[in-house]
Length: 209
Image 1 (cartoon, rainbow, N blue to C red):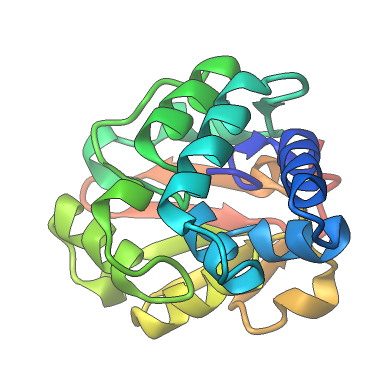
Image 2: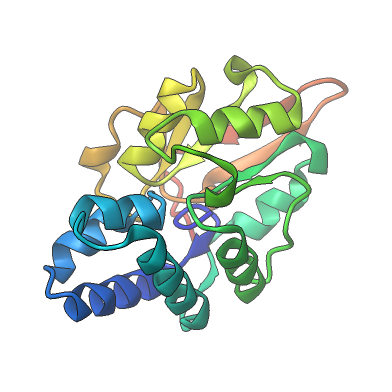
């Protein structure tokens, strides 16, 4: 969701910087840990001395309240409209309340199938979130294609046995090399519906605008 469908980077950076400073932590290091991971796992990694469950609630409330600059990324809305509703799922490290809030801020409908931080025991880079997404759709992992923007998400897709396309929206291309393909944004994807199959054509050199 974040970094694939929605640009929430300004909000993420603001929230994690403020939270880190409130606990005397390095805000740059904390924010770098936060992208593509569940908030509770970020908190456990950077501040093991804190009550992670309590702090997770605080961070979630801060993130839901901070909606400035949360917008749909290029091509996101068009691509989702081009897909049959039963052929895609959103698999996000955000909690369900945060996911619903951010999708609303970006004017993207909540899909029929969605896996959030609340639905898994282990978040990305564990394969569990993507395996649950495949199960919701009724497809085998090898039949699924993942769009991701973070190294943790790419690792999760790989561990789930799925192909993965990386988007250059959050991390430099050098950190996305383990993906099967790299594109600027979903604006570089064209969907073609066949009688049986769904083809996604990728343009790796499109401007992504």
